[in-house]
Image 1: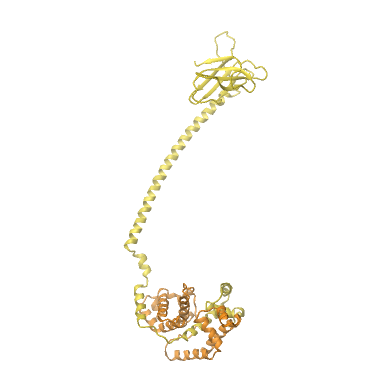
Image 2: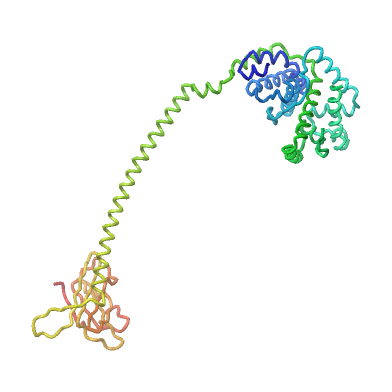
Length: 169
Length: 257
């Protein structure tokens, strides 16, 4: 397993990690930052953190793909706001199945997720985008859209549950 | 999944790191004791992971791979162990210097400590000697001035007892002890006054006294200026309270013997 190799100090493990997951991390960072150079920096930063603290990822609690997507988002938002990292990656436990990144299964799963997003009401999808990719708080989204705070909260949660449901379908 | 409904929406905001500090504090407190909500939080993060994965498709530039592997090679695992086990020359020099400085400081402290102990021992010895001298002086003084002290005046045979006084005077310190015997009783509201008669100048008051029933009296360490050369001592009878200068002729006087 890749993480086991990294924990053992095997530099080839990092090469494998890169082959498999660099696209995920880079894509999320690029979507958040809209800048290829900045996205590359986040990619380097996230992977080096794994090299330095491979124990931060707990394979028993979820998949590397989902975890990396969330960590990449947090680091990209930190970079966007030019602030020091606010979240310790070891504190982020992500329960996400299966370990999607390549192949036919991945394509099917990605189709389901994107399908669920496409079928969402525009306001709900927009709320998820603003919260996840733009790093806005629900208060900021409420101010931006003029909608009540409670409505924004409900939309975000409902949108996330819809993604979960779509993947299981 | 049984999630506490009041926290359900906050869990998704928490997963997004979008919760305000107070709400975050309340939720974290709840999460500590609620396994269901912790599980739901992990699932929510999983949902966020799915949302992130939906952005997939971009690939980093080719150079990025080598950049990462170069960075990894420069930071081999266990680098921190290597650094702490085999330090650079400068660190070793600093460590040696710090160790040597510590030894020097320790030796200086030991030396200082020894010196201080010697000084303390010397002071203790001085103090003991002074205490002994003081005790001796106190004993002597108590004996001289005690009401129980018996006075014996030796005179030639068949000579009736005469008033007499003996002054012991140390000029350098101005210290005076005066002993008198056979002093005649005083008239009412009168007192004997002792005078130091200097080599030059007016008599200096050297204490007041009234004799006891047997005519004995002492004056111990009256206030006198130091260094005055005494030509003689004299006694006058003065009004109660004493005088600054003799108001009557001396009834007794004596030069240095």
